[in-house]
Amino acid sequence: MNRLAALIRFPYIAAMPRAPLAILFDLDGTLADSVELILGAFRHTFNSHLGFVPGDHVWISGMGTPLSSQIRALVTDEDLVEPMIATYRDWQNQHHDVLLREFVGVRETLSLLHERGHEMALVTSKATEAAQRALRRIGIDELVSHVVGLDSTTSHKPNPEPVLHALARLHRSPADAIFVGDSPHDIAAGNAAGVFTVAALWGPFTRQTLEAAHPGRLIADIRDLPPLIEDLTTGIPAVSHP
Image (cartoon, rainbow, N blue to C red; front, side, top):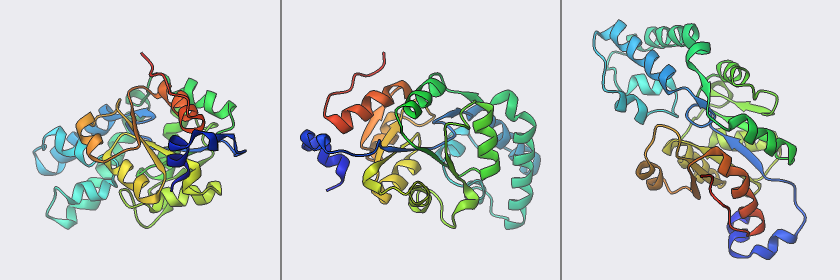
């Protein structure tokens, strides 16, 4: 039985000494409010190369997976993939610092978790350098000890490899970590890796979509995370943020 599941079922286990849980986070839609940036780059890229733009919902459904996979799912000409990736990244680089924002409560929540001794890592389908730039932009780069980006692994979410890679960097087992993400691809990767998954309802995906991915818990505000962790490790019910 997963240790977190055991803690929920048998709260007295929490009395056993243990290190604070490691916390893995997705980036876009979880820590960074980047949907406007992502959709802007998507619209510009498809309009520039193909002269039309699919509906935003089509692109949103693939968020959390690699950019190349998203483009290949919509483009039949393989020769267009690399030029479209270049256009997309160029537009994002130009507009990054204007359009990328922190979700309310992110810095205060991660600061609190850091003070409580939780090691934190990022697991993202964005390139590592771009992910580190985003962390710096929203002021949490010093709180996140490891970044597992697109170039860190050969397989990507929803495959569990990036999650397992992050755990290896932190020297933690799946039973001693949780993964917080806003997409069903995050939840699928975390579940497959054996970590306890937390679905973030403040991203672009609906509750129904996230529930279908079977997360361990769903939270509506990142400030609900510290009490949830206390709930998981002590058996005391968490109180949701209003």
